[in-house]
Image (cartoon, rainbow, N blue to C red; front, side, top):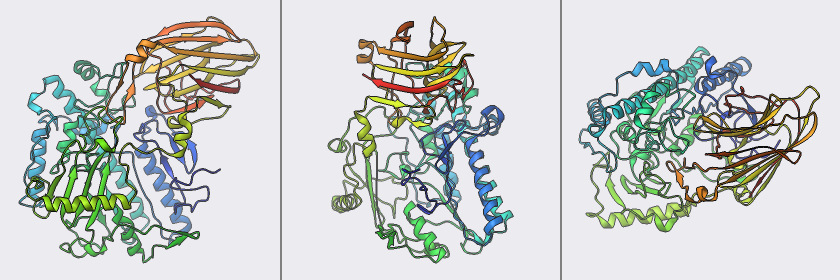
Length: 611
């Protein structure tokens, strides 16, 4: 098989240095139903959520098994493990037993907790004594302004996150224990970066969990009624944006804001007994310093060429110089940042940053380009004296700001960062953009939504040619999505079903009036959105997670040219997980069957046509 050159591995195991890959490639994947790849082969979780499955435990088990296998076969051979969990990125999904450890721990609210965290950080010497507490940014509410039900719900969101964090810590500990058990602790260096590029405010002002089929949040009271289910497989939940601000203490702003330290800073722990002097390090460093550090520790030289292809030199600086000298000056003196239109440059202890938007603002840049990104003025900070960006010096030191803006432009140009907006697509994205007909055959599974038919916003038909055995057949013909948002065309009780599931609401279903006969059958599904509904419906949700909803429309099913079912749905679009032909992998679209509900007849072809 080919086409995996940009994965952590290629068809030949040493493609990018890794011999094995286990994990998912999809952003914000479900921790109970992840779309896992074992090397380049799609695999399903070995257990269900009810049987105790969780991805963080699964990936830890896989890493431990690999370590044990390596130890058994080649104990003295050096190994490198890149252990990257889905935690604590959203969705915040974890078993109730972990959440219960944090009952009532966040009832004081985000304002009090940020102040307490700041005080503890200063008392423990984690931040400079002269660091100043920064105020809550405009647009985020105070805790005291919330209603009582709102406080209960939002406090519980933080409890779930804390439980998710503790479970992750536990599973990382199991992996480290495996290394100790093999006698390799003193011969292994551990780099632990914990975080999400700063805590994430993508949940919006009230967080994200239970939704109407419109895509909009249910009322606070309705959400509070199901709050005990947060963390389960039923919700892709995320906490309120103000929790991100509180948990980012002492820094300003949150994830995606590359213009401030709150959107670019995570803690790094380096552990190697006898080789790293314990204590705090404050040198400016960046994630691209990790590779040079490993090369130096291993006594290896970064290759100038691989397979006769000249390599781009490493950008970072080794951190080894700081291992035995906590006060050594930083060797990483220049670094640019850019994310979602937000920009910054670090140079010799100074920081210039520009906030195009705050992460909790909804639908602000869906069509933005570089001409729009100067919505706010650049800010300037002297990090040598102002550790956590409490004082903007842009107005007082315009010459220094000009110097840093020039450095940003030079670094952004050198690293091919322009245009900053809109986000760039791949050649395959461009090729699929205008594609309207998708033909699939039996056995096609786990097609990522990015490369599946984009049903949303279109009228469409699905033409399926299937062979029904004399004793009948059942199962999924084609499904796109899972229990949280999806569509499924399937056969049950010798009848054709079509179901749309929006926000885990299974209210839209059509069952044909006639049963399927044996032999070759042509099934045609026609979905036609109501023109007015489509025109007046705008995308809803936070940036990067927006969805058009809901659009009503007409659904019709014909068998061998004869209409056998027709209905009007209040919502005709649902999408999530992946597209599967002949099965429904991951979580089930419908309550009528259990995944994967494989089709027991034969599928000749499935054609999806977009209008």
